[in-house]
Figure 1 (cartoon, rainbow, N blue to C red):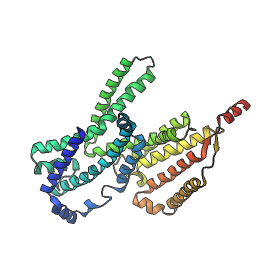
Figure 2: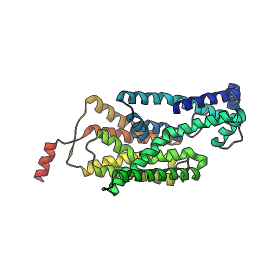
Figure 3: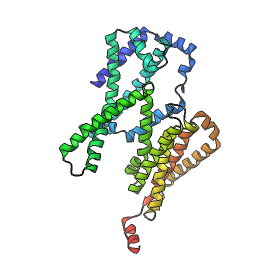
Figure 4: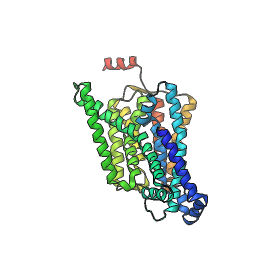
Length: 357
């Protein structure tokens, strides 16, 4: 049903575009406001964070996991994720088209959230405008509803069973219902607090989530050496760093402290804390294990090259607003190298060490 509503939204929006302003209208807009067509018009940092976050969401997004694992077979889940990636293309392209159309027809609107409905109401009959925004609502439900339900499930069942270990299944369901009500109310309050910058809440949430969970999730999948202490340190370290950087940036949506987006700071601290805690507090249980010559050369070469680039071109990268991303890539390369080279000792060796101790 959501997919059908998406298609109707695109058809209605495309019809509005060809009615007004049309291709000639966009050409006129390009002459009058060339900045609307700049690749970094919304701020290079913000654009990079959106794209990078969606790439990271491949392993972190609970909604994608839920939808894929709800399929009847693994093959259907894989196919669904591939189709979802393909379906993102029209959302990107039509989103740009509708935004430019609104800018051309309603030039005096200061906010996109106001310009778009004014544009459509001036071009289309009210029922079609209502159908278009039903598509927007379907977009919100398609992603927001699984996040709301999974968050309520985690808060009600996981947290509830941790606090009340003897709680019955019926009681946990009650906790989950109250959690869903609480999270929905919280979402509405957040929406009213900063309505004119609604997308900012998404970026803030992604920053906090990714800053806390990126390294632990990757470690859970690929690095068996990691301990509970390292995971907790990484969670709190990354989350606190991202939150503090936003505070230093005065919670601005696009103007950041030292021209570095908080998500790069939070995720970098998240990874570095994971590595340091694992190496220091697990000393004696790990060993340096050489990978294949090709893999070793690639990862070491990547670390060295990124260090050199970040050092030599720091001023240029910083002025362009990408120094946070390049520094994060450097930290990520170190993380990958740590996973490849720092391996747990065999159970026999660990047991012998404990006996000797």
